[in-house]
Amino acid sequence: MAMAGLYRRVLPSPPAIDFSSSEGKKLFSEALERGTMEGFFKLISYFQTQSEPAYCGLATLSVVLNALAIDPGRKWKGPWRWFDESMLDCCEPLDKVKAEGITFGKVACLAHCAGAKVEAFSHKPEHH
Image 1 (cartoon, rainbow, N blue to C red):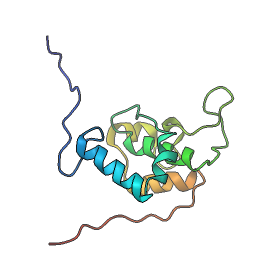
Image 2 (cartoon, rainbow, N blue to C red):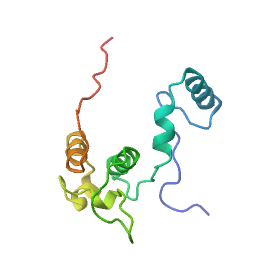
Image 3 (cartoon, one colour):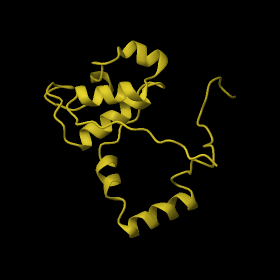
Image 4 (cartoon, rainbow, N blue to C red):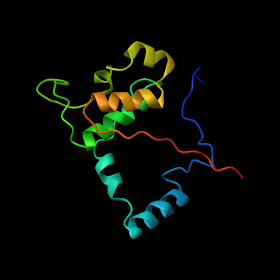
């Protein structure tokens, strides 16, 4: 019996490529051979799944801050000083992020507030 709600979604391909697909594995292998995967290994070792649907920016920033070995200067749980989404609230209240998501500018603000040196820029699509 099917339940209401969402269970997994098909990635929009293109532009997204399933990591475990033959094309995804080929791209990964090619990047590994070219020596352009070094950043991946540092990031994947700190991977966190977002705890709320609108926390994608907070979860991503937590991964990056931990991979950069920035000390949050406060405890996460027990004796552990570790970035978690719940600690990223200096630029935007968490309840607002939970309801509305977060802008790129606010993520940059949070990164700066957490001790990262930030130079924010966004990709501008090419016009054809």
